[in-house]
Length: 335
Image 1 (tube, rainbow, N blue to C red):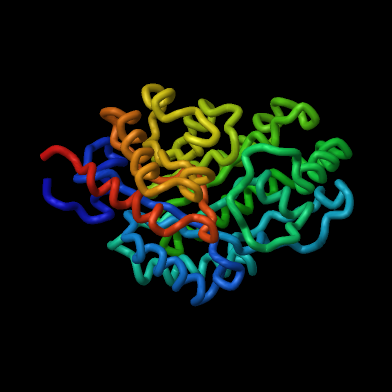
Image 2 (image 1 turned 180 degrees about the vertical axis):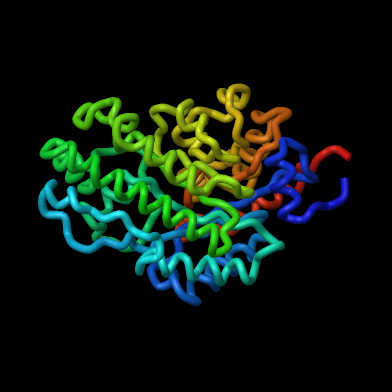
């Protein structure tokens, strides 16, 4: 089979066709000095070109535009619906326009959006450390989660109003991202933060899922939308039914395994490599073994090879990232 371009390779997989080799990509959060402006443009392009990736996930660590601090649950009742181009949004839109000018027609780009709950937890308790690292899968609730749960107990209706406003704002932002040149969105969702005994085990369905749908509706009609199930998915099948082109989750660290779900899901699988253990602590050989095993688990279904989530560049050896790309290229497809 003749060698494909990066866009042809991804497009083939999204169409259910087997390309010359599986597409591959991976991503990490850049330092706070490279979240916007030319520094962010340069960081993304250097990462893409250093590893010759098949698509670019555009990171989004620009803060959600907020007007005031949240002191009580009552403050959540007047969270405004935003246009989608306010200050924090605007920095991301400028990044997308610059990357589109460089990459349009060469590599597909998906821009990161967080759903309403993920945004709200950072609004009610802004993080002390502005360096965004790979999320923990287990452990005690974070201060963000404790505070949001307390606000939910104080006034559930007010929290719901804030979530609705944020979802509509994120939908507006998604539209503007696509207008700025993104080929799709990478929507990050996480239900193990939400459906807890204290919050109520059906809180996600009650308060969050409709907002996810609003964001995806605003993003329909594009080439490449990815849903990322962060954390340990409690309701994998509901997420897998979302109208997206591909789904990403920590199949190694959190489960379920690719082979357990491949026969019952419609979107393309994007995963296969353990970002929390194998990438930082394994060898190139163990990384390559995970790539081959993931492709074998997918069977006849073409897939995208990627880690289950972000990785920490401070602890992951570049040789292990090179091993992902080399393993994919060694697989190829039958002529």
